[in-house]
Image (cartoon, rainbow, N blue to C red):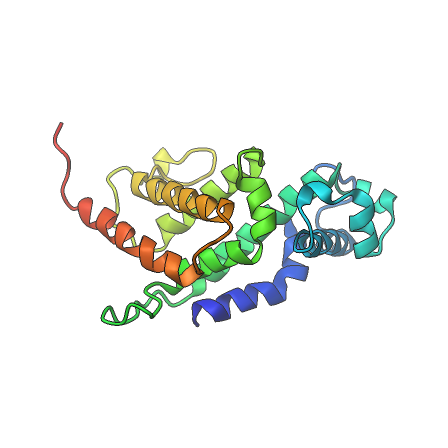
Length: 234
């Protein structure tokens, strides 16, 4: 499975998958099928609207009109458009990580710089580019701390479980925090770097393609992994 195929798979499942996040605003049981369908419809409506205009210009009336539900239904699930945006982002990130980890990590031939050197990494950038407006609003300087932390934790977990990074010394379950992720310094460092690069790219309007971003980023990750073979002396 290539990066484009993986992103296409995620796109096809957006309508159903983005409704998986539970929300404290709802009094209905999170497992209720109707609740999941309604949340999926509201999140899908917002995702479509953000492709047309900035999040700051979207009102509850716009969302309920696009989702074909009434305002009381909206407020039974979300307090406002910003809470809906947070839920949509965190759900999509969860789905993205699942798709990325399922992609074939085989490298393209290094003699051909036009080929994709890392399909999972390209899928990561492609997803952010596809939903640039929504992620730009949530990861930027006036964004959501909840979404930023969720992206950081999920990316750290993916880096830790990918098998692409050398193990660090302090990765035992006893060192896991409230997130359940062991204290893997290298995975946390890679996650922070990727989020920083992706956020900067989004704020600049995605001037390079996802494949170009992978070609630029991959050597840095290789150098980082190689550098961990030598323990620093203090």
